[in-house]
Length: 105
Image (cartoon, rainbow, N blue to C red):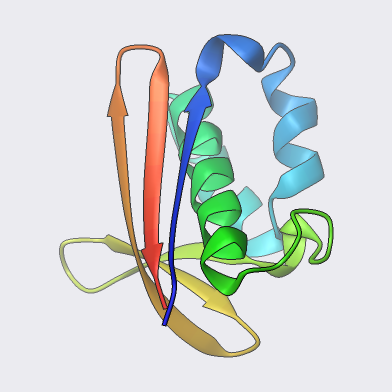
């Protein structure tokens, strides 16, 4: 079992659309399109994907970011990571200019 944590300074994301297209899967892009605050959404997804790779103990360049999906489940729309048809718990938080995520596998 591993735990991964990542924090993203949203001020560093200059072109939100381009960044989203580079890291989000097709399913995530559909969720992204419906969001009002696209920067917050994409920063949280990026933090979750990086935290997931850290929890796996993988180098950050070993898994394509689009292969890791951060989707919603249940009536309260709790996020989860989906990778190779396996679901993993994730917590995503935002405060000011920062997004942070923790993944436990």
